Structure formats: C-alpha cells, structure tokens
Length: 461
Image 1: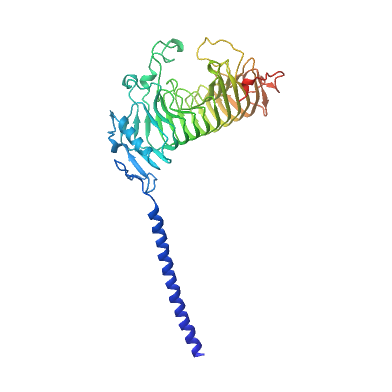
Image 2 (image 1 turned 45 degrees about the vertical axis):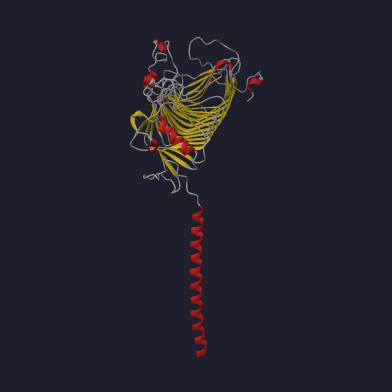
C-alpha cells in the first residue's frame, strides 16, 4: 500500500510538470502566431506630407492613412483660396487604400468650383469636421469655372462623405440674380445670366455614403446624384430659406438603388426630387418643410421620355409646405411612373398634401399636347394631418389622353388647418379605388380601368 501511495504522488507531480511545460509552449506558440500575423500587415504608404493619425476619436483603425488638408497648405480662415490644397490632398488620398481626407474642426475653408475625379482606391473617407465654403456669390466665382456646379465627385466607387461639419453654399447672392422667379412682378423673371451652381454633385459614381453633415444655403440644388448606383444618404440636415429658388435638398436623376433616411430638410423647393431614369428608391423618416414637399418629377419636359419605378416614401413628416407628396409631369412627354408607395406620412398645414399634376408648367404659355407620361400603380396609405385651405387636400389632375390608373387610397384623413369648412378633392381622368373611406370623401375618383387605355410603345420602360 505504501509503495502504491508513493507511486501515485510521484506520478501526479510528474503529470503537473508535464502539463505546465505544454501550456508554456502553447502560449509561446500563440504569441509567435500573433506576432507573425502582425508582421504581414502592410502599413499605409507615407507620401509627402505624411499621413497622421487623428487626435480626435474619429473611429479609424491604427492603420488608416489620414490626410489633413492643412498639411497640403490649406489655411482655413474662410478668406484664403484653399482649392489647390484640397486638390493635392484629394490626389494623395485617392491613391491610398482606405485613406481619409480630413477637413479639421475649427476651420473654414473657401474652395472654388472643383471636380474631384476618380477612380480611387477603395475605402476612401471624406471626413468633414470643419466648414467648407463656396465663393461669396457670382462676382467671386473664378472666371472660366462652370457656374452650374460647385463641388463635383466624378467616377468615384466606394466613398463615404461624413462628419459633423458644415458645407456652406453661400447662395444668397445667387438667389438675388434678376432672372430668378421671385425677383420679377407676379413671379416673372427679368433678363440676365441665370446659371446657378449645384452645391454637391456626384456623377457616374457607385457605392456612396453621405451621412451626418449639415449643408446650408445652396445656390441651387444642395445634393445631386446623376448616373449613380447604390447610394445611402443618412442623418443629413439641409437648410435654406423658404424663398430661396430651386434649392432642392436632394435630387436624383438616372440613379438606382438609393436609400435616403433620417434627415431634416427645409428649403425653397422640393425636399427630395426624383428625376427620370430613377428606380428602387427608399425614402424613410424625413422631416420636410417648409418646402415644396417630396416630388417625383418634373418628368417629360420638352417631349422627353421618362421612366421611374419602385419608389417608396414612408414614416415621414411634411409641414408648412406648398405640396405634400407630388407627381408632376409636363404635357408631351412619354414613359411611365409606376409602383410608387406613400405610406405613414403626417401632414402639418400643407397645401396639396396629395397631388398628381400632369399639366405642370413653369409659365402660363405651355401649349396643350396629347402625349403624356403614364402614371399607374400608386398607393397612398395612412396619410393624415391638416391641409392649408388655399388648395384642396387631394388634387389628381391626370392627362386628357393618358389617364392615371390603379390609384389606391387607404386610411387617408386630411382636415383643414383653419376653420370647419372642408374642401372637396379634385380629380380629372383619374381611375382607382379608395380601399377605405377617405376624409374628405374622394367621390370624384373613377372606378375600375378606362375602357380604351391606349397601348403605346412609348409607355414601356
């Protein structure tokens, strides 16, 4: 028995030493693997000037190359022209994988009209923490530069423009050009040059994120996306005075797969406008107004063909605006608008909360034409609130020759913002189905489908 006990004790001590030995070797091996993996990470290149790690909590990894525009000569006093410094910083960041171009907090950078061209390496971040300013009106615009656009991003793939900074279009002097509609008597225009720049334009680009920024006082549109794909716009604050002309918040044209979320827009035109060739657009949680509302169009200008489909606007507020949710087309156009949903939208003192206008015209001299963009498969559901009594709560003015079809309304309740007298809706050549009783009642909507809806090749999209 004594021998057995001694053997067990000795064996136990031996096993403990053996286990400790293997644990130590395993940890050493783990450490070797970790160090080996680290050594294979290629650090970002260090062109002159060198990239710097941001001092603020920017959320970047230790291996993100950050290019501060001040390192390229930008002054940031709001007076000196910092255009060349931004161009140099862009070219360097564009050629670097997962780079960040930093516009630092506490500085205001004045930039002339500029095109930032790609393609760039993937993962580019344009981080705006300070203020970017346009030149102060037409007289400060550099001669030879386009007066139709300020900052253009061309052929960019996989870029994020983000931050807590401000983009200031300084549009006041552009709005006061004599040609602008509000300068003449009764909305007429006066002779003179009229081009005004879009503030931020993305052209022929894809996989874009624009988030967190404040943009104000655009000379014309604040953001415009042309021929783009896969765009996310999130948490923007866009602001211009109610009388500022053509200052659409976000305009998209020939652009697909767009998400516009969680943003606040107040301006002198549409909060969001959707142009021809746009498909698969999801707009959600937008606070809009004062403004001209959220619009599809205008479409079909100068007898053009326009195709728009799969548009959804949900969970939004429109307040103190000239329109609510609008589809507007010119006479003489062709193509179609289809598969559109407006759902869960609250109206607060809005003229024309629900409007289809197929007689859209900027002057009083537009001629009557028989051709029109076909509007079909439009759903309005859970749209409630108050309307400005200067206009009817529902205005469905469809083409004489190409009626609107399959308009569906459900849970629509619109009451006058003042007084007790309720205005009747207006319909013209509009066919559809109120699934529930609307307030006010939509007795003017024609049931079913028109007997002889023309089958035109031009309507196919």
